[in-house]
Length: 67
Image (cartoon, rainbow, N blue to C red):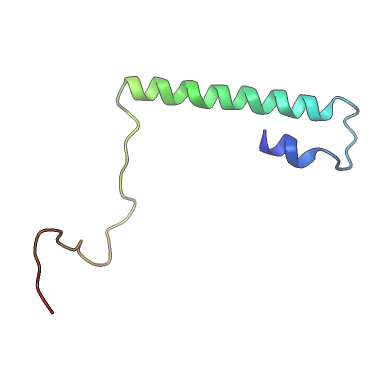
């Protein structure tokens, strides 16, 4: 849908239905994306993870080392 909005009033050779076609394509892709999120969520396969080790250890939220 973002591309459809961007493409409106731009020079194109797609004809009068180009914006409507882009919008339809965007809605279809968004629907597919949401379906996949639901499918993966039911299987508990969409998880957060770290891509790298942090450079510094995480700061303790329970220990106060003082000034």
